[in-house]
Every structure is written in structure tokens, then in C-alpha cells.
Image 1: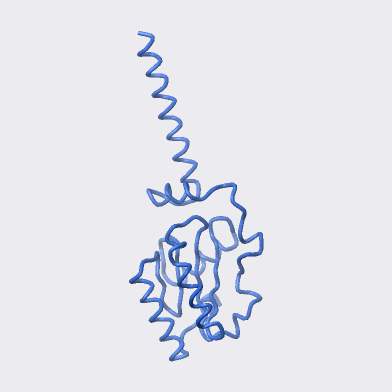
Image 2: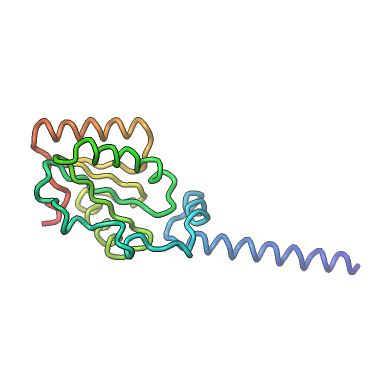
Amino acid sequence: MNQKITGAILALVLVGSVAYLGLSFLSNGETGISGLVTGIFASETEEDPVQNGEEDNGEQNGEEDADVVVYWFWGDGCPFCHDQEPMLDQWEEEYSEEVQIERFEIYYDEDNQELFEEVASEYGMERLPVPATFIGEEHWLGYNEEMGQEMENKLEECLDTDACINPAEKLD
């Protein structure tokens, strides 16, 4: 009898612990499996890259001089964002004079979260997953190689035609 009671107590403790951990992982604002995965990989003890000056908001770094401005909203700990970042780094290197990549981390920066909501609303988006990439009048949610190729094609089209808007223009 004591073994049954002990087993039942252990089971309740285990279920309660799993429920608590699941809720804390989902506190990053995402839902479902992706929220759970992102929550697991996004440590609360990580330093805030925005507060440490590693990221910018496009306000002081030559955005006006670039032929094409790309807005990229990402989350620290997001695996798809991590996969997309090398492509953006390559663009910055390859098109350093013509393209400005504006990177906005949204998990830890409330101002960037608000900007993301504003930009997304102007592009008619209802869901707000990351990564989210905005080039001219187009946007992409998520990342895979095929989407990366579509983004690169759009970037080259914008460079060739010089007819793509800066995403910030939609906010005016």
C-alpha cells in the first residue's frame, strides 16, 4: 500500500514539474511545439544582444544611403533564424555599398517587438513568427533554402530596377 501511495505522489510531482516547465518554456510568447523548442534553446540567462550594442535599429548606420534596405526580425535562440543569418551576412559582404540589412531581435527587445507588429500590420500579416524578412513590397515568414533563393532573387531585382521601397516607408 505504501508503495502505491509513494508512486502516486511521485507521478503527481512529475506531472506538475513537466507542466510548470512547459509553461515557462512557452512564456516567450510562442505557442505549440515551436514555442516549446524555442523556449528550451533560449536561455533566460543569456545576455541581451540589443542592450550590449551588438544589434542596431537602422537609425544611425547609413540606411538612407543604401539602394535596398532589408528588414529582418529574428529571435535569439530561434533555429530558423540561425540558419538564415549566414545568407544575410553574405549579402552584407557582397553588397556592402548597395544593401543595408536591418536586424531586429524581438524576443528580448520590446521596442523591436512593437516595430515588428507595426511593419507586419502594414504588410497585411496576421501571424508574427520569426524569422520574418521584408524586401521591398514582399515578405517571407520562416526560412529554408527555397525561400532564401526567392529572397536573393527579390534582392537582385530591387538592385536592378531601383524600384523597391524601404520597409520603413510603409510606416510613414
